[in-house]
Image (spheres, rainbow, N blue to C red):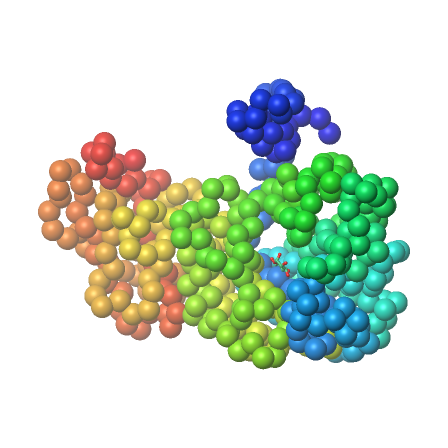
Length: 452
Ligand code: GLC
């Protein structure tokens, strides 16, 4: 594929500081427009989905230890880590139950670890370790899950680690043991690149994922990974698929991890990936679970900033999902389902100078959704709304509200809007108020002294 490349853009920016950099290819406007239009089209479902479930499942669930890193970081020997393979049975794996639970959580997509950094793939790979030949599970675990997700109308994401610390072809083995240096054995590295890209081709042909969730790119450069070749291959063979931002130099969206952004991240599309406790995989000794309320707050904050939340669960080695996680998903699902009109397809909310809380806007910007945390001490207050409110109501509840204008206008600014919400309409987690406006939202701009 010719034309615009993020890598070229980065190179272009770097050229400002580094004159030695090669001249970036000139992008034709028509190419750029076509690529922007294609991206906008493929990102549609993702931007509307807002909520997805991440699943970290692998042999690390046998002993309940940290995925891959526990041997890389030297907390357990590689041999002992790999012994877990003998206990990975998937004996109670019920992919349809997983998909149904994900659907009940209100999520619109899921991302499963098809292969983590330890190299143990969950499907029947031609080469490398996989659960079909190397564990008593003895079957492909990806295919039935993909099928179940699609049956439930959910989009399919596959996590794939570029790193494979088990492969004899891969340079790094543990943090203090390296097999070789690429510069000393480029052909061995080339064989690794062929191996890992073949696996991505295989995933594509078998499952045609809607989303590729790459990880581990940090160990090598975009050039070393031959990332452009892989990117172009995916675009050619699965053109509607989304690629996350962890294939170095490429990707459709940003992936902040664990830390809830304080202000809106720079990427137009972004997704916060977040563990439910402090671990990605199942770790029975990690009891630091976020409560459903805390997850709902984080989700509403994410929505307010225009992003998606990818909430992680870690099934056990037998394929069962721990009760705390399943219960939390159902409780979050109650709230998401009730408030779905303020969530799916929503746009980022209004500045906190106007409303001291999270908010979202409908696609046409004619409905403002105010998220009210807990039980307010009195009326919910909103500043600077120039529109007339046609209807005010509690979302998912039907209670009609009667907003009041409070006090005088100042310097042409509209008066404060006060909205009383009766106790009986308050949600135990977060109440959402819909304000249907007389047109697209206009907030008074004190600088310009006008609605904008
Ligand atoms: C990090 C970790 C990995 C985890 C991932 C999820 O990249 O290396 O263990 O799977 O985050 O985002």
